[in-house]
Length: 357
Image (cartoon, rainbow, N blue to C red; front, side):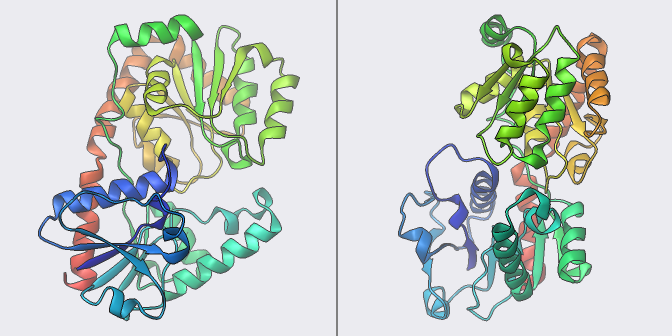
């Protein structure tokens, strides 16, 4: 038996970010490895809230973790993998943990002092109990090794995947109504947080009067600064905020956008890059942190601290049908190569290596 800690996958849709990643990895493992029983484990505090992730796969069982009783709760488990940070002390078997990013530790200027302290302590405790740390990028693996004095040889970078059936190019008839409603626009997707660097995207689009800007994402601790920048750049009438959209609406916007701009200063992986590429939208992407790993050779990279460079890259795409088509073709091919099944196969091989299971 393989035990997976999947507390972050619980809750109500839409499932994005870490929750969506956990669901995709678990579903791919269950589908590809039907002969192996899997225990999908929840922290007791999360189990009490309900809305658990319960795949219908015949080899899946739900369990509730309670230290130090886990050796009796999952007695047949040969390996334990927490897919998102929490790692119990028991049972005494090989333990893996996925660390998606270490932003609160690496960048305390973007979080509250309390969150920096609490998250840092949790990461230190968890990594200290792990036999292997799994990360979505080499960038994050190196940060874990540096910040937590963890042996780099005990890290494994296993990239996230993308569902190219859920994120896909639409037919022209499906895209036309969205373009008729919004005109030519640049799309930005992400929480309105400082590390997303959306202010520089606003400044860049303000230099391109023929384009509008659509921002999809919930307000966070960067929302006030973002609104101030929109006002200062006289972008109020050219900017649309959509705090929440359905999956179908997001896919439609990605298909209809002239450019998807990912201007983050820090990402543990950058799944939005792959989702956009799978939809066939040209991606202008920051060259910071892990993002070049996510985008490969299929994005147009820029210094995201330079609004003029961002504007120039966007303008190059929208003014060149040839470049648009080149990025679209490369992006679709790159996304198809980055499937969840492929990533899950690499993870399953790691379980054999570490736990002989």
